[in-house]
Image (cartoon, rainbow, N blue to C red; front, side, top):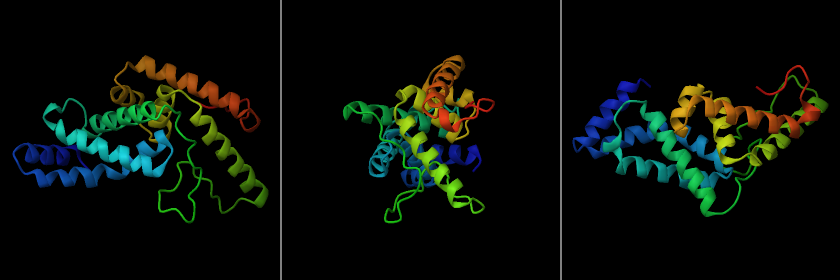
Amino acid sequence: MPADSDSDAIHAVLRGEVERYAELVQRHQAATLRLAFSLVGNYEDAKEVSQNGFVKAYRHLRRFRGRAKFSTWLYRIVANECKDFCRRRSRKPQAIPFAADPDDDGPVGLFEVADPAANPREELDSREFHRRLSDAMAELSMKQRTAFVLHHLHGLPVEEAAAIMGCRVGTIKSHLFRAAEQLRARLQPFVAPEEGLR
C-alpha cells in the first residue's frame, strides 16, 4: 500500500475523523502482529503487545512527523512494547514455534519447513534444524534478536532497522554480526563452513 495512503488516513484522523484510524490498523495489523510474535514467541502475548502498540501510536499520532514511513514509526513502537513486555515479565522471549500447531488458531511459525520434494529424512532434518534455530533465537539478547528479526525475517534494510531501533547503522550491523556468530555456534552441525549465517 503506498505511503501516501497512510498519510491521507493520518491527516484525516488528526482532523477529527478518528474512524479512519481503522484503515491504518487493518493495513499494518498482520505485519505488526508477526513482528511482535517473532520477538515475544507467544501468539496471545503478541496480540496484546501489538494491540498496545496501536493504542500508543494512536495516542501519540500528533508526534508522527512523517520523516520516516508510518510503518517504520509503528514498528519502533511495537518493538519497544515487546522489550518492555519481556522486561516486565523478567524473562527471555520464548522460542519461536517453527510450525503451526494444527489445533492453534495462531499464525504459521516464522520458519517455513514444508518442502513437498523432501524425503522423510530430509523433512526430519529440516524440522530439527528449525527447532534448534528457534531455541537459539530465544537465547539472543533482545537487541540482537530484534535486529536479526527485522533484517533477516522481515527483510528490512539495515537503514530501516536502525531507524526502528533508534540506533546507528553500524550498531545494527554489529548486532547482526554477533547474532549470526551466536546462531552459527549453536547450529554448527547444520551450517556448512562455506555458507554460514550472514
